[in-house]
Image (cartoon, one colour):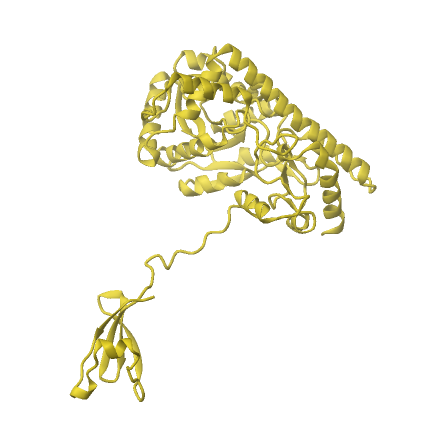
Length: 464
């Protein structure tokens, strides 16, 4: 309730009012005119005049009144809607988080062991350096590029621990904005929903290159190449290292070579987002092949990493930004500037997840166990993919070709459903997904594949 400060004036004694009169509601405003005006020097104060009586009222208008309500996040908002649904058959296929066959969150056994070892060691909780945990930065670069890679031995990699993939991409975006003001980032159409937010927030201009072909539900390779060729020389080309999000469509090894040819010819800078190393195929090396090929060509490369998926460290926010430079001196200068950007942004990164990664990779037995668990997770997703294809093929009598489901890789499948069809998936079938038609197979069980297939078939054929 607005508070009020009263200033009362009258020419006659009978017009004077006590605070008791006001509190008892005895203020008589008959035959008076009411007017409002803002106090000259205070937009949050108003003067109300009632004939001879004037009141200065402190208005309860917020200084944040002009801030509008932000729309729900298109990905995280899906989970909020899912939680509010009480239907017994509901499915959450929106957020990219791994689930067991029972659709429960999964904490890797190797992570539990690493956690226990850290507890036994009694590690402190002191601040990390701005660039993060040195042991983590070493192993994360080794995992991505290969421990014997010349760029590591020659100290040409600037590695800074970031706040998972998102934070690492944001550091790189700030570096581009600051030191490449003419630079433009090309991102695939479609791409992960947060890419555009990151570059918009960093004030880095971006445009799109063709990637998805709705006619084939596959890669528009010719369109991709044409758009990258047409980009201004020296552009940053954002590439998904493996398991493209949201489509699950990756270039073939031969196509990756052609992509590298064009990027080199145009003097572009390849910028990799690697969110699923080891989680897509089950092999750390296979999922890093595209990045390593570009580096082997002697190109300067930017690469962001995340350990949310392959180690299930979603809430630990552990990742890294790597910049491969042509010389050790350039790498040192780039690292110094990444640290300078990080300092006012978040000061320094969290330690717990970094220690988990460093300890697992640094211990031969734990590293072997991690690889086995990655193979298990990737294998379960592949089994679900196979089952979904079988269910779609057997249930749909129209003759539609659903083989694109098998050609995609990783935790996502791009169903080719439009927004209206996605809405039908939710309102009729209680299946929650992003409105671009992406579903997370990591959130699907074998037991639910037939139900999902029925929903997709109904939505595809009966909703335009």
